Amino acid sequence: MSAREEILGRVRAALADVPAAETPADVAVDRPEPRPTTAVDVELFAERVADYKATVVRCTPEDLPTHLAAALEGVLRLLVPADLPEELRPADAILDEQLSTAELDAVDGVLTTAALGIAETGTIVLDHGPGQGRRAATLVPDLHVCVVRTDQVVADVASAVARLDPTRPLTWISGPSATSDIELDRVEGVHGPRTLTVLLVG
Image 1 (cartoon, rainbow, N blue to C red):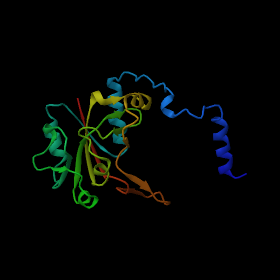
Image 2: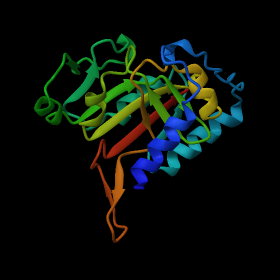
Image 3: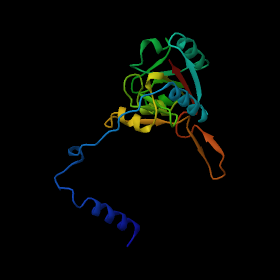
Image 4: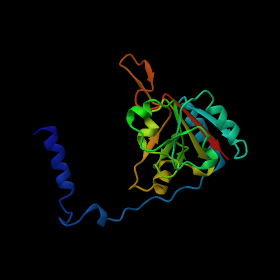
């Protein structure tokens, strides 16, 4: 028996008592209750994101424009989602109106918001809702500047899953894109942005 046959056999055995007409939508799934977020969780989130070699800037809503301008200094062609809030959108930004991959490659950076941040893992999750753009627009440009509010930070992955809509497309970002070859030489920017800047507001 091959490994494939053995695995499929185990799957069939596990599903043997499931009625043939039942679909995944018929089965209720218990979703965990999110644990309340604390100031310690926010600090841990900032620390873990920085551990991934991302830049983390803590700021208040009042000084966000100053820090945003600093994060975007030198970025000549900035892409933003068409529905990014007006108060975050620089006047000369390029709106993403379904730009092609070649057009995305020609921009220097992208500015988005996020769905939430996970303290335990230092992960930012985009569900590509308002202000978050589409997946290609956040993966192709070399720089991603992401605005995360402290009230969007959750303690752990279970709390994130409890808040997220499983039917939405989800992109989980743990630092800038990086990989290592067989010599363990780190190469950045292969699968996504080479530079990630997180503005943590609150």
